[in-house]
Image (tube, rainbow, N blue to C red; front, side, top):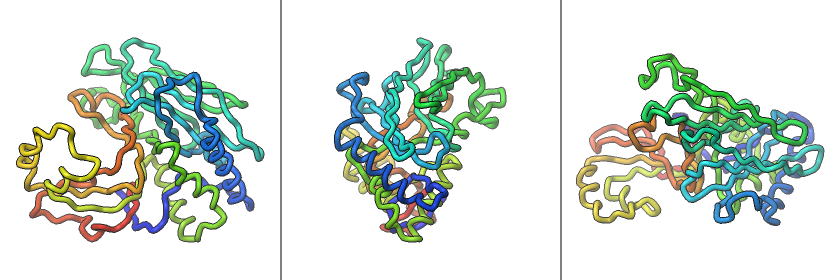
Length: 320
């Protein structure tokens, strides 16, 4: 867990190493914003009841971020993955053919979309559950831009976990540690796009902040900005947007956790968070991307324990 104090908005964009870098980013941002304003991101090839989200990430190593739009159901658990990519090339917006990634094996688990942190494409991992909970191998599909279209390669990874993972007796290749979880936000959230548009007006401190965020993401970290809140069990249970719908368990949950202190980072906006699901065999599946989150828990401690985040309480920070 890395952290810095922050007074600026997070951006995930890379800065091209040219004299007119900021101009290019600004032009690209304007084109991307127009895609949303005109609903050009909507595809009749995708389910019409799905919601759309996006992230900005350079997937072809040209130092200009692509806009990766996805369509998904409420919980992002749909088997098919629907992706629409837009880029800015030679002063013009480029709209690529839609990607519909399907499970090719009837036992393949719901896939998860990742980015290559070194800007070499979009990656989708799927666990193959033939003998659950031993859900090996995984399928791995890599989509790369090539001459105005996407080419893809699919491979089977028989031992995908980290070398030290006890679920598998054979040392693994650590597939997840090689990848980056996207940070998808709703398509009506223009925070990052506005950052691109206003690239020429950023202060030196904001540029440095964004460069650090970029570096962290290239190392595979998820990066979040928000306000630190330290909550007792009652405050955590009643926190807006997080109270369980099963109110019948309210007393037992509070009683069971009455001595706990929850240190959370409350986001500035809703966004996706990558992590493991809940269940016995989740540790041997790929991670998943949960959308529309409002916070992450950084630490759960007892009321009599010291808390390294106490000095940040009610302050805005960025963590990775």
